[in-house]
Image 1 (cartoon, one colour):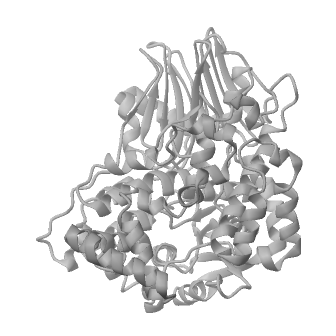
Image 2 (cartoon, helix red, strand yellow):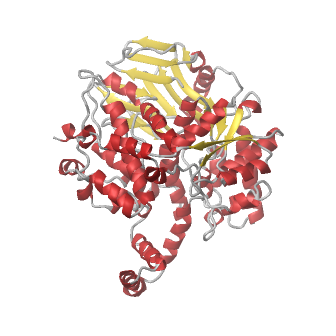
Length: 617
Protein backbone atom coordinates (compact mmCIF):
# COMPACT_ATOMS: atom_id res chain seq x y z
CA UNK A 1 0.00 0.00 0.00
CA UNK A 2 1.20 3.54 -0.68
CA UNK A 3 2.26 5.90 2.08
CA UNK A 4 0.72 9.36 2.45
CA UNK A 5 2.74 12.28 3.77
CA UNK A 6 1.95 15.99 4.11
CA UNK A 7 3.64 18.86 5.91
CA UNK A 8 2.47 22.44 6.29
CA UNK A 9 4.93 24.94 7.74
CA UNK A 10 8.69 25.51 7.88
CA UNK A 11 9.42 21.75 7.82
CA UNK A 12 7.67 21.39 4.44
CA UNK A 13 10.54 19.87 2.49
CA UNK A 14 11.10 16.52 0.76
CA UNK A 15 12.48 13.83 3.06
CA UNK A 16 13.61 10.25 2.61
CA UNK A 17 14.11 8.16 -0.47
CA UNK A 18 11.15 7.89 -2.81
CA UNK A 19 9.73 4.52 -3.72
CA UNK A 20 9.24 3.27 -7.27
CA UNK A 21 6.07 5.26 -7.91
CA UNK A 22 5.36 8.66 -6.41
CA UNK A 23 3.52 11.94 -6.93
CA UNK A 24 4.26 15.13 -5.04
CA UNK A 25 3.31 18.78 -4.68
CA UNK A 26 5.93 21.17 -3.28
CA UNK A 27 5.06 24.81 -2.68
CA UNK A 28 6.10 27.38 -0.15
CA UNK A 29 5.38 25.98 3.34
CA UNK A 30 3.65 22.94 1.82
CA UNK A 31 4.87 19.50 0.83
CA UNK A 32 2.49 16.68 -0.12
CA UNK A 33 3.59 13.24 -1.34
CA UNK A 34 2.25 9.79 -2.01
CA UNK A 35 4.54 6.95 -2.98
CA UNK A 36 4.34 3.20 -3.28
CA UNK A 37 5.47 0.12 -5.16
CA UNK A 38 2.50 0.29 -7.55
CA UNK A 39 1.31 3.25 -9.68
CA UNK A 40 -0.30 5.96 -7.55
CA UNK A 41 -1.65 8.29 -10.26
CA UNK A 42 -5.27 7.53 -9.37
CA UNK A 43 -4.62 8.41 -5.72
CA UNK A 44 -3.25 11.92 -6.39
CA UNK A 45 -5.17 15.01 -7.52
CA UNK A 46 -3.76 18.50 -7.89
CA UNK A 47 -5.29 21.67 -9.29
CA UNK A 48 -5.21 25.41 -8.40
CA UNK A 49 -7.89 24.95 -5.72
CA UNK A 50 -6.64 21.96 -3.74
CA UNK A 51 -4.21 19.07 -3.62
CA UNK A 52 -5.54 15.67 -2.50
CA UNK A 53 -3.83 12.37 -1.78
CA UNK A 54 -5.59 9.26 -0.50
CA UNK A 55 -5.29 5.62 0.39
CA UNK A 56 -8.74 4.24 -0.26
CA UNK A 57 -10.62 1.04 -0.96
CA UNK A 58 -14.10 2.43 -1.48
CA UNK A 59 -17.24 0.33 -1.71
CA UNK A 60 -20.02 1.07 -4.16
CA UNK A 61 -17.84 3.10 -6.53
CA UNK A 62 -17.29 2.12 -10.12
CA UNK A 63 -14.29 -0.16 -10.60
CA UNK A 64 -11.10 1.37 -11.98
CA UNK A 65 -12.19 4.96 -11.27
CA UNK A 66 -9.65 7.66 -10.57
CA UNK A 67 -10.22 7.64 -6.83
CA UNK A 68 -8.54 10.97 -6.03
CA UNK A 69 -10.36 12.81 -8.82
CA UNK A 70 -13.64 11.28 -7.65
CA UNK A 71 -13.03 12.43 -4.09
CA UNK A 72 -11.93 15.85 -5.31
CA UNK A 73 -15.19 16.27 -7.20
CA UNK A 74 -17.17 15.34 -4.08
CA UNK A 75 -15.18 17.81 -1.99
CA UNK A 76 -15.78 20.59 -4.51
CA UNK A 77 -19.53 19.88 -4.46
CA UNK A 78 -20.10 19.12 -0.76
CA UNK A 79 -17.23 20.63 1.22
CA UNK A 80 -15.84 19.03 4.36
CA UNK A 81 -18.83 16.69 4.79
CA UNK A 82 -18.13 14.90 1.50
CA UNK A 83 -16.82 11.84 3.38
CA UNK A 84 -20.12 11.17 5.17
CA UNK A 85 -21.52 9.20 2.25
CA UNK A 86 -18.40 7.14 1.60
CA UNK A 87 -18.25 3.44 2.45
CA UNK A 88 -15.16 1.32 2.89
CA UNK A 89 -11.62 2.15 3.91
CA UNK A 90 -10.03 5.54 3.37
CA UNK A 91 -7.38 7.92 4.62
CA UNK A 92 -7.55 11.28 2.86
CA UNK A 93 -5.23 14.28 3.14
CA UNK A 94 -6.18 17.52 1.38
CA UNK A 95 -4.68 20.99 1.22
CA UNK A 96 -7.17 23.69 0.31
CA UNK A 97 -5.13 26.41 -1.40
CA UNK A 98 -7.90 28.98 -1.17
CA UNK A 99 -8.37 28.47 2.59
CA UNK A 100 -4.70 27.85 3.33
CA UNK A 101 -5.81 24.83 5.38
CA UNK A 102 -4.47 21.29 5.63
CA UNK A 103 -7.20 18.74 6.30
CA UNK A 104 -7.44 14.98 6.80
CA UNK A 105 -10.21 12.39 7.18
CA UNK A 106 -10.21 8.79 8.40
CA UNK A 107 -12.88 6.22 7.56
CA UNK A 108 -15.80 5.53 9.90
CA UNK A 109 -14.27 2.55 11.77
CA UNK A 110 -10.52 3.05 11.40
CA UNK A 111 -9.72 0.45 8.76
CA UNK A 112 -7.06 2.87 7.54
CA UNK A 113 -4.83 4.90 9.83
CA UNK A 114 -3.47 8.45 10.08
CA UNK A 115 -1.03 9.94 12.58
CA UNK A 116 -0.09 13.57 13.07
CA UNK A 117 2.13 15.87 15.10
CA UNK A 118 2.91 19.55 15.52
CA UNK A 119 6.53 20.62 15.63
CA UNK A 120 8.47 23.83 14.94
CA UNK A 121 5.29 25.61 13.85
CA UNK A 122 4.61 22.82 11.35
CA UNK A 123 1.87 20.19 11.07
CA UNK A 124 2.85 16.74 9.81
CA UNK A 125 0.26 14.12 8.78
CA UNK A 126 1.02 10.63 7.49
CA UNK A 127 -0.18 7.05 7.32
CA UNK A 128 3.05 5.99 9.00
CA UNK A 129 4.74 7.15 12.19
CA UNK A 130 8.14 6.76 10.53
CA UNK A 131 7.46 9.72 8.23
CA UNK A 132 6.42 11.91 11.14
CA UNK A 133 9.61 11.02 12.97
CA UNK A 134 11.69 11.77 9.90
CA UNK A 135 10.03 15.16 9.43
CA UNK A 136 10.80 16.19 12.99
CA UNK A 137 14.53 15.68 12.48
CA UNK A 138 15.00 15.20 16.21
CA UNK A 139 15.30 12.15 18.47
CA UNK A 140 11.88 10.64 19.24
CA UNK A 141 10.89 10.00 22.83
CA UNK A 142 9.01 6.86 23.83
CA UNK A 143 6.00 7.58 26.01
CA UNK A 144 6.11 5.70 29.35
CA UNK A 145 2.32 6.06 29.56
CA UNK A 146 2.05 4.24 26.23
CA UNK A 147 4.03 1.31 27.64
CA UNK A 148 1.43 1.02 30.41
CA UNK A 149 -1.39 1.16 27.87
CA UNK A 150 0.23 -1.52 25.75
CA UNK A 151 0.43 -3.85 28.75
CA UNK A 152 -3.22 -3.10 29.53
CA UNK A 153 -4.73 -3.48 26.05
CA UNK A 154 -2.06 -5.36 23.97
CA UNK A 155 -2.08 -2.24 21.78
CA UNK A 156 -1.88 1.52 22.26
CA UNK A 157 -5.36 2.98 21.96
CA UNK A 158 -6.23 6.09 19.97
CA UNK A 159 -5.40 8.97 20.22
CA UNK A 160 -2.06 8.01 21.78
CA UNK A 161 0.96 6.46 20.08
CA UNK A 162 4.17 4.97 21.39
CA UNK A 163 5.87 8.35 20.98
CA UNK A 164 5.34 11.53 22.91
CA UNK A 165 3.92 14.33 20.78
CA UNK A 166 2.51 12.09 18.03
CA UNK A 167 -1.22 11.29 17.93
CA UNK A 168 -3.56 9.04 15.96
CA UNK A 169 -6.60 10.50 14.22
CA UNK A 170 -9.70 8.76 15.58
CA UNK A 171 -12.05 6.80 13.28
CA UNK A 172 -14.85 8.90 11.83
CA UNK A 173 -12.90 12.09 12.49
CA UNK A 174 -11.62 15.05 10.50
CA UNK A 175 -8.47 17.04 11.24
CA UNK A 176 -8.10 20.73 10.35
CA UNK A 177 -5.01 22.92 10.64
CA UNK A 178 -6.75 26.29 11.06
CA UNK A 179 -7.43 28.37 13.02
CA UNK A 180 -5.64 25.86 15.26
CA UNK A 181 -5.01 22.15 14.83
CA UNK A 182 -8.26 20.50 15.85
CA UNK A 183 -10.08 17.22 15.30
CA UNK A 184 -13.83 16.70 15.21
CA UNK A 185 -16.15 13.79 14.42
CA UNK A 186 -18.04 13.68 11.15
CA UNK A 187 -19.68 10.33 12.13
CA UNK A 188 -20.10 8.27 15.25
CA UNK A 189 -21.98 5.18 16.27
CA UNK A 190 -25.28 5.96 18.00
CA UNK A 191 -27.81 3.82 19.86
CA UNK A 192 -31.53 4.48 19.93
CA UNK A 193 -32.37 1.35 21.97
CA UNK A 194 -35.03 0.25 19.48
CA UNK A 195 -38.79 -0.04 19.25
CA UNK A 196 -39.79 -2.75 21.72
CA UNK A 197 -43.25 -3.00 20.15
CA UNK A 198 -41.93 -4.65 17.00
CA UNK A 199 -41.96 -8.43 16.94
CA UNK A 200 -38.90 -10.65 16.95
CA UNK A 201 -39.75 -11.88 13.49
CA UNK A 202 -39.71 -8.33 12.13
CA UNK A 203 -36.35 -7.61 13.74
CA UNK A 204 -34.94 -10.92 12.47
CA UNK A 205 -36.10 -10.20 8.93
CA UNK A 206 -34.63 -6.70 8.96
CA UNK A 207 -31.37 -8.04 10.40
CA UNK A 208 -31.20 -10.63 7.65
CA UNK A 209 -31.76 -8.02 4.94
CA UNK A 210 -29.26 -5.57 6.44
CA UNK A 211 -26.49 -8.18 6.68
CA UNK A 212 -27.14 -9.51 3.18
CA UNK A 213 -27.03 -5.97 1.77
CA UNK A 214 -23.76 -5.19 3.56
CA UNK A 215 -22.13 -8.37 2.23
CA UNK A 216 -23.34 -7.56 -1.29
CA UNK A 217 -21.90 -4.05 -1.07
CA UNK A 218 -18.53 -5.39 0.04
CA UNK A 219 -17.74 -6.92 -3.34
CA UNK A 220 -20.08 -5.35 -5.91
CA UNK A 221 -17.28 -3.25 -7.46
CA UNK A 222 -14.81 -6.11 -7.81
CA UNK A 223 -14.04 -7.76 -11.12
CA UNK A 224 -15.96 -10.98 -10.56
CA UNK A 225 -15.93 -13.52 -7.70
CA UNK A 226 -12.88 -15.52 -8.82
CA UNK A 227 -10.45 -13.30 -6.92
CA UNK A 228 -12.75 -12.90 -3.91
CA UNK A 229 -12.21 -15.03 -0.82
CA UNK A 230 -13.49 -15.29 2.75
CA UNK A 231 -11.73 -15.83 6.05
CA UNK A 232 -13.57 -18.77 7.60
CA UNK A 233 -13.07 -19.56 11.28
CA UNK A 234 -16.33 -21.48 11.57
CA UNK A 235 -17.93 -18.79 13.74
CA UNK A 236 -21.26 -17.13 13.01
CA UNK A 237 -19.74 -13.99 11.47
CA UNK A 238 -17.32 -15.50 8.99
CA UNK A 239 -19.79 -18.28 8.15
CA UNK A 240 -22.56 -15.77 7.46
CA UNK A 241 -20.30 -13.77 5.16
CA UNK A 242 -19.25 -16.89 3.25
CA UNK A 243 -22.83 -18.12 3.03
CA UNK A 244 -24.14 -14.86 1.58
CA UNK A 245 -21.25 -14.64 -0.88
CA UNK A 246 -22.29 -18.04 -2.20
CA UNK A 247 -25.95 -17.07 -2.45
CA UNK A 248 -25.32 -13.67 -4.01
CA UNK A 249 -22.81 -14.86 -6.61
CA UNK A 250 -24.52 -18.21 -7.28
CA UNK A 251 -21.04 -19.74 -7.16
CA UNK A 252 -19.22 -21.70 -4.44
CA UNK A 253 -17.53 -19.24 -2.08
CA UNK A 254 -13.76 -19.54 -1.83
CA UNK A 255 -12.94 -19.99 1.85
CA UNK A 256 -9.68 -20.12 3.81
CA UNK A 257 -9.14 -21.47 7.31
CA UNK A 258 -6.42 -22.06 9.85
CA UNK A 259 -5.98 -25.15 11.98
CA UNK A 260 -3.66 -26.36 14.73
CA UNK A 261 -2.50 -29.85 15.63
CA UNK A 262 -3.36 -29.19 19.28
CA UNK A 263 -7.03 -30.22 19.74
CA UNK A 264 -7.51 -27.68 22.54
CA UNK A 265 -7.12 -24.84 20.05
CA UNK A 266 -8.11 -26.49 16.81
CA UNK A 267 -11.64 -25.61 15.67
CA UNK A 268 -11.14 -26.46 12.03
CA UNK A 269 -14.05 -28.89 12.24
CA UNK A 270 -16.51 -25.99 12.42
CA UNK A 271 -14.95 -24.31 9.41
CA UNK A 272 -15.32 -27.62 7.57
CA UNK A 273 -18.98 -27.87 8.60
CA UNK A 274 -19.65 -24.39 7.21
CA UNK A 275 -17.60 -25.02 4.06
CA UNK A 276 -19.45 -28.26 3.34
CA UNK A 277 -22.83 -26.60 4.00
CA UNK A 278 -22.07 -23.88 1.45
CA UNK A 279 -20.32 -26.23 -1.04
CA UNK A 280 -17.31 -23.94 -0.71
CA UNK A 281 -14.01 -24.15 -2.55
CA UNK A 282 -12.27 -24.62 0.77
CA UNK A 283 -8.57 -24.41 1.71
CA UNK A 284 -6.74 -24.97 4.99
CA UNK A 285 -3.34 -24.38 6.51
CA UNK A 286 -2.13 -25.82 9.80
CA UNK A 287 0.13 -23.43 11.71
CA UNK A 288 3.10 -24.98 13.52
CA UNK A 289 5.36 -23.65 16.29
CA UNK A 290 8.27 -23.14 13.91
CA UNK A 291 6.06 -20.85 11.78
CA UNK A 292 6.15 -18.17 14.48
CA UNK A 293 9.67 -16.65 14.63
CA UNK A 294 9.98 -15.61 10.98
CA UNK A 295 6.51 -14.06 10.89
CA UNK A 296 6.86 -12.03 14.07
CA UNK A 297 10.30 -10.74 13.07
CA UNK A 298 8.78 -9.50 9.80
CA UNK A 299 5.65 -8.18 11.48
CA UNK A 300 7.48 -5.99 13.97
CA UNK A 301 9.25 -4.30 11.07
CA UNK A 302 5.86 -3.28 9.67
CA UNK A 303 4.07 -2.29 12.87
CA UNK A 304 5.37 1.17 13.71
CA UNK A 305 4.39 0.77 17.37
CA UNK A 306 4.17 -2.25 19.71
CA UNK A 307 1.33 -4.65 18.94
CA UNK A 308 0.70 -7.70 21.10
CA UNK A 309 -2.20 -9.60 19.51
CA UNK A 310 -0.88 -13.13 18.96
CA UNK A 311 -3.51 -13.80 16.29
CA UNK A 312 -1.31 -11.94 13.80
CA UNK A 313 0.34 -15.30 13.09
CA UNK A 314 -2.71 -17.35 12.01
CA UNK A 315 -4.14 -14.27 10.27
CA UNK A 316 -1.00 -13.94 8.15
CA UNK A 317 -0.91 -17.60 7.17
CA UNK A 318 -4.60 -17.58 6.29
CA UNK A 319 -4.15 -14.51 4.09
CA UNK A 320 -1.01 -15.97 2.50
CA UNK A 321 -2.91 -19.15 1.70
CA UNK A 322 -5.55 -17.05 -0.05
CA UNK A 323 -2.96 -15.09 -2.00
CA UNK A 324 -1.36 -18.35 -3.18
CA UNK A 325 -4.74 -19.28 -4.67
CA UNK A 326 -5.12 -16.06 -6.63
CA UNK A 327 -7.25 -14.12 -4.14
CA UNK A 328 -6.89 -10.33 -4.18
CA UNK A 329 -9.67 -9.43 -1.69
CA UNK A 330 -10.61 -11.28 1.50
CA UNK A 331 -13.85 -10.68 3.38
CA UNK A 332 -13.51 -10.80 7.16
CA UNK A 333 -16.18 -11.10 9.85
CA UNK A 334 -14.69 -8.57 12.26
CA UNK A 335 -17.22 -6.25 13.90
CA UNK A 336 -20.16 -8.63 14.09
CA UNK A 337 -19.68 -9.39 17.78
CA UNK A 338 -19.38 -5.70 18.61
CA UNK A 339 -22.54 -4.80 16.70
CA UNK A 340 -24.82 -7.70 17.61
CA UNK A 341 -23.52 -8.66 21.08
CA UNK A 342 -21.34 -11.72 20.61
CA UNK A 343 -18.59 -11.48 23.21
CA UNK A 344 -18.89 -13.63 26.33
CA UNK A 345 -18.25 -10.69 28.65
CA UNK A 346 -21.59 -9.17 27.59
CA UNK A 347 -23.47 -12.11 29.10
CA UNK A 348 -21.18 -12.07 32.15
CA UNK A 349 -21.95 -8.38 32.64
CA UNK A 350 -25.66 -9.22 32.79
CA UNK A 351 -24.88 -11.47 35.77
CA UNK A 352 -22.99 -8.64 37.46
CA UNK A 353 -25.94 -6.32 36.87
CA UNK A 354 -28.31 -8.83 38.47
CA UNK A 355 -25.98 -9.29 41.44
CA UNK A 356 -25.78 -5.52 41.95
CA UNK A 357 -29.57 -5.47 42.45
CA UNK A 358 -29.23 -7.65 45.54
CA UNK A 359 -29.50 -5.38 48.61
CA UNK A 360 -26.10 -4.21 49.79
CA UNK A 361 -26.64 -5.46 53.33
CA UNK A 362 -27.24 -8.95 51.98
CA UNK A 363 -24.25 -8.88 49.62
CA UNK A 364 -21.75 -7.45 52.07
CA UNK A 365 -23.19 -8.93 55.23
CA UNK A 366 -24.03 -12.49 54.13
CA UNK A 367 -23.07 -13.57 50.62
CA UNK A 368 -19.57 -12.18 50.28
CA UNK A 369 -18.34 -13.22 53.77
CA UNK A 370 -19.82 -16.66 53.18
CA UNK A 371 -18.05 -17.11 49.86
CA UNK A 372 -14.79 -15.81 51.32
CA UNK A 373 -15.02 -18.28 54.19
CA UNK A 374 -15.80 -21.17 51.87
CA UNK A 375 -12.76 -20.51 49.67
CA UNK A 376 -10.49 -20.43 52.71
CA UNK A 377 -11.63 -23.83 53.95
CA UNK A 378 -12.39 -25.69 50.73
CA UNK A 379 -11.03 -25.97 47.22
CA UNK A 380 -14.36 -26.58 45.51
CA UNK A 381 -14.35 -25.01 41.97
CA UNK A 382 -17.84 -23.55 42.45
CA UNK A 383 -16.76 -21.45 45.43
CA UNK A 384 -13.56 -20.38 43.68
CA UNK A 385 -15.59 -19.18 40.70
CA UNK A 386 -18.08 -17.48 43.00
CA UNK A 387 -15.23 -15.68 44.80
CA UNK A 388 -13.89 -14.43 41.47
CA UNK A 389 -17.33 -13.11 40.49
CA UNK A 390 -17.75 -11.42 43.86
CA UNK A 391 -14.36 -9.75 43.61
CA UNK A 392 -15.03 -8.49 40.10
CA UNK A 393 -18.58 -7.39 40.92
CA UNK A 394 -17.14 -4.78 43.27
CA UNK A 395 -15.00 -3.26 40.50
CA UNK A 396 -16.63 -0.44 38.59
CA UNK A 397 -17.39 -0.78 34.89
CA UNK A 398 -15.59 -0.88 32.56
CA UNK A 399 -12.57 -1.54 34.81
CA UNK A 400 -13.76 -5.02 35.74
CA UNK A 401 -13.26 -6.28 32.19
CA UNK A 402 -9.59 -5.28 32.33
CA UNK A 403 -9.00 -6.64 35.84
CA UNK A 404 -7.38 -9.76 34.37
CA UNK A 405 -4.45 -7.81 32.90
CA UNK A 406 -1.02 -8.12 34.46
CA UNK A 407 -0.83 -4.53 35.69
CA UNK A 408 -4.30 -4.83 37.22
CA UNK A 409 -3.71 -8.12 39.01
CA UNK A 410 -0.10 -7.72 40.21
CA UNK A 411 1.33 -4.86 42.24
CA UNK A 412 3.15 -2.44 39.95
CA UNK A 413 5.96 -2.30 42.52
CA UNK A 414 6.64 -5.95 41.76
CA UNK A 415 6.67 -5.34 37.99
CA UNK A 416 8.40 -2.07 37.25
CA UNK A 417 11.60 -0.33 38.23
CA UNK A 418 11.36 2.54 40.67
CA UNK A 419 12.53 4.97 37.96
CA UNK A 420 9.74 3.88 35.63
CA UNK A 421 7.14 4.03 38.39
CA UNK A 422 8.20 7.54 39.29
CA UNK A 423 7.49 8.70 35.73
CA UNK A 424 4.10 6.96 35.38
CA UNK A 425 2.86 7.58 38.92
CA UNK A 426 0.02 9.83 37.75
CA UNK A 427 -0.87 7.80 34.64
CA UNK A 428 -4.07 5.75 34.44
CA UNK A 429 -4.08 3.35 31.48
CA UNK A 430 -7.81 2.72 31.90
CA UNK A 431 -8.77 6.36 31.36
CA UNK A 432 -9.26 5.84 27.61
CA UNK A 433 -11.61 2.90 28.16
CA UNK A 434 -13.60 4.88 30.73
CA UNK A 435 -13.92 7.84 28.40
CA UNK A 436 -15.40 5.65 25.68
CA UNK A 437 -17.70 3.77 28.05
CA UNK A 438 -18.93 6.80 29.99
CA UNK A 439 -19.23 8.95 26.87
CA UNK A 440 -21.04 6.37 24.76
CA UNK A 441 -24.19 7.73 23.06
CA UNK A 442 -26.26 4.97 24.66
CA UNK A 443 -28.48 4.37 27.67
CA UNK A 444 -28.08 0.64 28.25
CA UNK A 445 -24.92 -0.80 29.74
CA UNK A 446 -24.73 -3.37 26.95
CA UNK A 447 -24.60 -0.74 24.23
CA UNK A 448 -21.94 1.12 26.18
CA UNK A 449 -19.84 -2.04 26.11
CA UNK A 450 -20.44 -2.39 22.38
CA UNK A 451 -19.37 1.20 21.81
CA UNK A 452 -16.20 0.75 23.86
CA UNK A 453 -15.31 -2.40 21.95
CA UNK A 454 -15.83 -0.73 18.57
CA UNK A 455 -13.36 1.95 19.63
CA UNK A 456 -10.60 -0.21 21.11
CA UNK A 457 -11.13 -3.93 20.35
CA UNK A 458 -12.04 -3.25 16.73
CA UNK A 459 -10.35 0.01 15.69
CA UNK A 460 -7.12 -0.27 17.67
CA UNK A 461 -6.69 -4.03 17.79
CA UNK A 462 -8.57 -6.32 15.40
CA UNK A 463 -8.42 -4.03 12.36
CA UNK A 464 -4.71 -3.40 12.88
CA UNK A 465 -4.19 -7.16 13.00
CA UNK A 466 -6.24 -8.15 9.96
CA UNK A 467 -5.39 -5.18 7.75
CA UNK A 468 -1.65 -5.23 8.39
CA UNK A 469 -1.13 -8.97 8.10
CA UNK A 470 -3.40 -9.36 5.07
CA UNK A 471 -1.52 -6.64 3.22
CA UNK A 472 1.76 -8.24 4.22
CA UNK A 473 0.51 -11.41 2.54
CA UNK A 474 -0.52 -9.48 -0.57
CA UNK A 475 -4.32 -9.32 -0.25
CA UNK A 476 -6.75 -6.52 0.60
CA UNK A 477 -9.22 -7.24 3.43
CA UNK A 478 -12.75 -5.93 3.48
CA UNK A 479 -15.14 -5.93 6.42
CA UNK A 480 -18.82 -6.33 5.50
CA UNK A 481 -20.03 -5.81 9.09
CA UNK A 482 -18.19 -2.50 9.33
CA UNK A 483 -20.61 -0.75 7.03
CA UNK A 484 -22.10 2.52 8.34
CA UNK A 485 -25.59 1.63 7.17
CA UNK A 486 -25.52 -1.78 8.85
CA UNK A 487 -23.97 -0.33 12.01
CA UNK A 488 -26.60 2.38 12.25
CA UNK A 489 -29.31 -0.26 11.90
CA UNK A 490 -27.85 -2.33 14.75
CA UNK A 491 -27.95 0.79 16.92
CA UNK A 492 -31.74 0.63 16.78
CA UNK A 493 -32.04 -3.01 17.89
CA UNK A 494 -33.26 -3.31 21.51
CA UNK A 495 -30.45 -4.50 23.82
CA UNK A 496 -32.53 -7.48 24.98
CA UNK A 497 -32.55 -8.75 21.39
CA UNK A 498 -28.77 -8.62 21.21
CA UNK A 499 -28.04 -10.44 24.47
CA UNK A 500 -30.87 -12.30 26.18
CA UNK A 501 -29.73 -13.81 29.44
CA UNK A 502 -26.79 -16.08 28.61
CA UNK A 503 -27.68 -16.16 24.90
CA UNK A 504 -25.35 -14.00 22.84
CA UNK A 505 -26.28 -12.53 19.45
CA UNK A 506 -29.86 -13.55 20.05
CA UNK A 507 -31.59 -11.82 17.13
CA UNK A 508 -28.65 -12.31 14.78
CA UNK A 509 -28.78 -16.07 15.25
CA UNK A 510 -32.54 -16.01 14.79
CA UNK A 511 -32.02 -14.15 11.54
CA UNK A 512 -29.39 -16.59 10.27
CA UNK A 513 -31.27 -19.80 11.02
CA UNK A 514 -32.10 -20.30 7.34
CA UNK A 515 -28.49 -19.66 6.28
CA UNK A 516 -26.22 -21.33 8.83
CA UNK A 517 -26.00 -24.97 9.91
CA UNK A 518 -27.25 -25.67 13.43
CA UNK A 519 -23.78 -26.63 14.70
CA UNK A 520 -22.45 -23.17 13.77
CA UNK A 521 -25.29 -21.30 15.45
CA UNK A 522 -24.94 -23.23 18.70
CA UNK A 523 -21.11 -23.36 18.94
CA UNK A 524 -19.19 -21.21 21.40
CA UNK A 525 -17.05 -18.34 20.17
CA UNK A 526 -13.39 -19.06 19.38
CA UNK A 527 -11.73 -17.37 16.40
CA UNK A 528 -8.16 -17.46 15.07
CA UNK A 529 -6.39 -17.88 18.42
CA UNK A 530 -2.76 -18.98 18.61
CA UNK A 531 -1.74 -21.78 21.04
CA UNK A 532 1.50 -20.01 21.91
CA UNK A 533 1.05 -20.76 25.61
CA UNK A 534 0.88 -24.49 24.90
CA UNK A 535 3.67 -24.52 22.34
CA UNK A 536 5.98 -22.58 24.62
CA UNK A 537 6.19 -25.64 26.88
CA UNK A 538 6.30 -28.20 24.08
CA UNK A 539 8.60 -26.54 21.51
CA UNK A 540 12.27 -26.06 22.41
CA UNK A 541 12.76 -23.91 19.31
CA UNK A 542 9.97 -21.52 20.31
CA UNK A 543 11.12 -21.47 23.94
CA UNK A 544 14.71 -20.69 22.91
CA UNK A 545 13.49 -17.95 20.58
CA UNK A 546 11.44 -16.35 23.35
CA UNK A 547 14.18 -16.46 25.98
CA UNK A 548 16.92 -15.37 23.58
CA UNK A 549 14.91 -12.19 22.98
CA UNK A 550 13.66 -11.53 26.52
CA UNK A 551 16.87 -12.62 28.21
CA UNK A 552 19.17 -10.39 26.15
CA UNK A 553 21.10 -7.70 28.02
CA UNK A 554 19.52 -4.87 26.04
CA UNK A 555 16.05 -6.06 27.07
CA UNK A 556 17.01 -5.97 30.74
CA UNK A 557 18.47 -2.49 30.26
CA UNK A 558 15.31 -0.86 28.90
CA UNK A 559 14.47 0.44 32.33
CA UNK A 560 10.85 -0.74 32.39
CA UNK A 561 10.82 -3.96 34.40
CA UNK A 562 12.40 -5.12 37.64
CA UNK A 563 15.21 -7.61 37.40
CA UNK A 564 13.98 -11.13 37.91
CA UNK A 565 10.57 -10.49 36.33
CA UNK A 566 11.19 -12.94 33.49
CA UNK A 567 12.15 -15.72 35.92
CA UNK A 568 9.06 -14.98 38.03
CA UNK A 569 6.76 -15.05 35.01
CA UNK A 570 8.23 -18.35 33.87
CA UNK A 571 7.76 -19.89 37.31
CA UNK A 572 4.13 -18.69 37.31
CA UNK A 573 3.71 -20.07 33.81
CA UNK A 574 4.93 -23.49 34.86
CA UNK A 575 3.15 -23.73 38.20
CA UNK A 576 0.05 -21.51 38.15
CA UNK A 577 -1.56 -20.89 34.74
CA UNK A 578 0.12 -21.53 31.40
CA UNK A 579 -2.56 -19.84 29.33
CA UNK A 580 -2.53 -16.58 31.29
CA UNK A 581 1.21 -16.17 31.78
CA UNK A 582 2.01 -17.47 28.32
CA UNK A 583 0.03 -14.57 26.83
CA UNK A 584 1.94 -12.13 29.05
CA UNK A 585 5.25 -13.57 27.85
CA UNK A 586 4.02 -13.09 24.28
CA UNK A 587 3.21 -9.43 24.95
CA UNK A 588 6.67 -8.84 26.40
CA UNK A 589 8.26 -10.70 23.48
CA UNK A 590 6.51 -8.45 20.95
CA UNK A 591 7.36 -5.33 22.95
CA UNK A 592 11.05 -6.19 22.98
CA UNK A 593 11.12 -7.20 19.30
CA UNK A 594 9.57 -3.86 18.44
CA UNK A 595 12.29 -2.05 20.38
CA UNK A 596 14.97 -4.03 18.57
CA UNK A 597 13.43 -3.27 15.17
CA UNK A 598 12.65 0.41 15.75
CA UNK A 599 14.12 1.95 18.88
CA UNK A 600 17.56 0.33 18.48
CA UNK A 601 17.80 0.50 14.70
CA UNK A 602 18.39 4.21 14.15
CA UNK A 603 21.98 5.39 13.63
CA UNK A 604 23.57 7.69 16.20
CA UNK A 605 23.08 11.26 15.00
CA UNK A 606 19.73 10.80 13.26
CA UNK A 607 17.84 9.30 16.21
CA UNK A 608 19.31 8.42 19.56
CA UNK A 609 19.01 4.91 20.94
CA UNK A 610 15.74 5.12 22.82
CA UNK A 611 16.33 3.08 25.93
CA UNK A 612 13.61 3.95 28.37
CA UNK A 613 15.78 4.83 31.31
CA UNK A 614 17.60 7.56 29.39
CA UNK A 615 14.32 9.47 29.10
CA UNK A 616 13.26 8.97 32.70
CA UNK A 617 16.30 10.64 34.29
